Length: 280
Image (cartoon, rainbow, N blue to C red; front, side, top):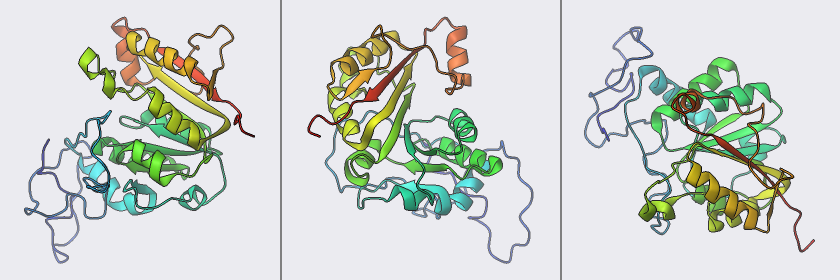
C-alpha cells in the first residue's frame, strides 16, 4: 500500500505557471511532504477514525496507484460529489442529491464502469456508490463528470457504518452488491458481507418493495447467499422457483465478469424484495 501518491498540483506553487498536460494513464508518485494529506480536497484515508468499535471488516482498503486523471477528478469533484463515511451525522439523501428521486446504494463498485452505465441508463434513480479503492473512486468521478451524470455520489469508507449510523430507516429504494470478496478460505467466511446480521441492518434501511440485487462468480458464496436470503424474514425471492435469477438487462456485463466467464466461471444473480413491515 503506497503512501507516496499525490495530486498533480500538490508540489507546484501558485506562481509555477500553467500546468503541463498530463497523461491520464500515468501514475502519480512521490512529491508529497511527510504528513501532508494525500488528497487535500479529496477522500480521507480513514474517515471514521477510532470513533467506532473495531470489528471484523468484510473489505480490504486498497490505496494503490492513482493516475493523474483519477487524482484530478478526486481533487476537483470530491467536494461536490464525494461523501466521507465518518458516522458522525445522519445524512439527508434528498439534500445530498438535490432532488427527491429514489436512491439505490451500491456497495463495492470496482472501477465504476458498470455503475456509471447504469446511472446513465436510469437518470431518474440516484446512485450512492461506496468503495474504499481510491483509483476506483477517482475513475467513477471522472466517468460521471464526462457523462454529465448528476445522479451519482461516491462514498468513501465502511458501508456498515453508513447503513447503521448515517442513513434513516426506509430511506433506500434498492441495494446492489456485485462481486463482493468471496473470502474463499473457510476460516475467513466470517468476513463475507452477505450474512444474517448485515441483511437485518440493510432491511431496516430499505423501503418495502426495494430490490436487493447480489451477483457473484464464486459458486459456494452464491449458495450461501441464497440460503441466508431465503431464510431471512425481511426478504422474498423474486424467482418463483426460489433459485437464482437470470442476469437482468439493467446490470451490464463488466470486464471483470467477462474475464471470469472466459475462464469458465458461473455467475449467479440473486434478486430479492424487501417485504412489507410485519408490524404495520
